[in-house]
Length: 256
Ligand SMILES: O=C(CO)COP(=O)(O)O
Image 1 (cartoon, rainbow, N blue to C red):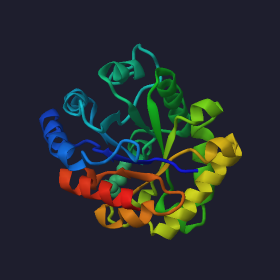
Image 2: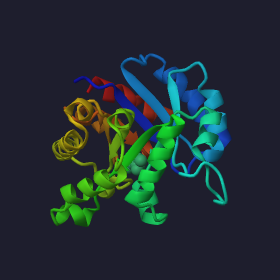
Image 3: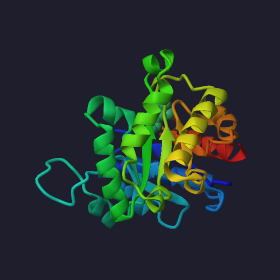
């Protein structure tokens, strides 16, 4: 099954609204040649930068995602943002369960699952992150960890809902470290994720789910990674913070 490439920039806690607009203004002409049928290009700014970026991408092939969403519709949840609030702004995608949220903010598979259901109910397209720690890989626990994250994070989803979900495989040891998983290691793990999704939701759904790689992906390694049969794009941190490096990465990934 052919799956459309999806390259998403996770800006993390970087870029004010003015800086985000400047980045998108610089990126637009550099990626204007990328046909929307060939690849989805997404940028995921902070909540406070979303509105400026949504305005700046108008008329371009760049889509916008948020970095988190709360599961409740509204209520006494100081500091949180609902799915309806994101939808109203014009947000299309939302990153869920990033390892930094798991590590620093108490995110669990259960809360990822609640956020995921709220995002889907509101019509947002979720990017669900999974990935193992270095110690887990070194002690042979990678598949067990990924299975638990997928089983818990995707619990109770219908096939129809799963068809709308993107999975991001981000080995925690490769995030921001400059250490990329080799294309072989990444493909082996993506293949495991694909097989797990096939078992959970049936092949007709699992084979269609896009699985991004994330962790020190850059222009230099994007082509080889995305050339792997089960790697359908990337979730990019550092290399997405500059228009020229992100554009080069996107073009190389599409060539993969
Ligand atoms: O965490 C990431 C994207 O969500 C990856 O970050 P880096 O590309 O900076 O390693």
